[in-house]
Length: 441
Ligand SMILES: C[S@@+](CC[C@H](N)C(=O)[O-])C[C@H]1O[C@@H](n2cnc3c(N)ncnc32)[C@H](O)[C@@H]1O
Ligand code: SF4
Image (tube, rainbow, N blue to C red; front, top):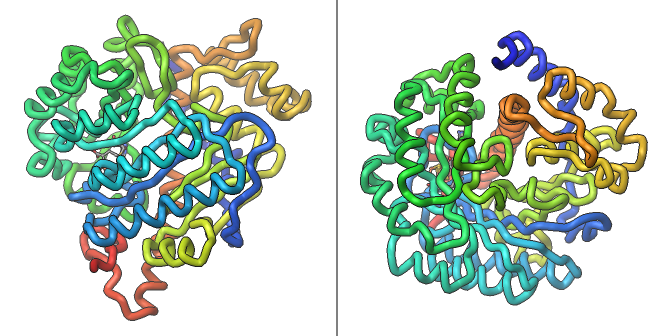
């Protein structure tokens, strides 16, 4: 049995309070930040273009425009060179979006550049179900993609209609057939599902999982439906109002379906062979985000790049990076960030924490560690702390809370960009989405 909703809400309140300063960003100068002194580093490349702007999505995305996208990729590669020249080393690269596969030639050229400059072996790419076909799959395979992640969200056609994805990305049956055909082409084929949609029943979610299990893909990321102030109204009009009280029941159903055959790779990602992970923030201690609307985390400092595509291009032409804001976390917050990301990735290694933060880590975070133990969310092992299946539920809640606070920051940045564009006399927004639209041509 899981704990009561009262514990859930107390934990979330405490979590919000303890992490309230994480996103307090200040202006930054745009120079390449210092390479991390401690631990490995991942590269995250953001491609914000999409063919349709889904009503629930709070990522940094804009309506696709070919000319703008081509210029954007050129700027991206110039920014990647800057990190190479500054001596950065990367363990792997993650192309996220938006929709990275929207401009295949540009994407493949960029993957080639990253592999040449940094010798990375892990290459992860996000895509949508429509792009899951030949010859693109073969080209991605030849380019060295090791993990392909497909945004399915659900196989339920009624829900796909509500999400406004049915017409563009195909029916549940078409998507399932494409995944089946792609299975085995990449070391990891991941399927993204979203649970706790307002009109999603437990039976519909279980059917989604059964279909997934029958397709031969070896990883699934089950995201709880999250939101942001700017998308909330549009999302609720299109899809209804989700009930957060159902999260526990639905997450339990996911674990029961998946855990016999799959092992958890993080609190919301499950992998057939028990290896591989879903989030670059778990895969590595540090990460650099390039492109517009991307985040970096380097030795306890968070950075964000510009959300304006026009400003981003301009900055790169001036020899700057896209970085416009930064926040150096306090020592205690750096420790809390480590605890959140390590526990989300299923465990905290005592030696690692001591090396990274010193012995004081254990007394500064004594309360947090003790609470996890008392709730039986984590067990103490020889090596450190191991997340339990019931702890996965709470870490899933905390990580979605953290993502929602990042979404609020994204909203603030987009409002700022909108004001800038309006001041410059440009028609900045699509009325239905409040997303800045690229200036085409
Ligand atoms: C940035 S998208 C890239 C995938 C691709 N653009 C697509 O949608 O097919 C990555 C994943 O984020 C998840 N996502 C987007 N908005 C979300 C939300 N509001 N709540 C939970 N997950 C969300 C979806 O599962 C999506 O597949
Ligand atoms: S869910 Fe994917 S396709 Fe839809 S708007 Fe977000 S990034 Fe674009």
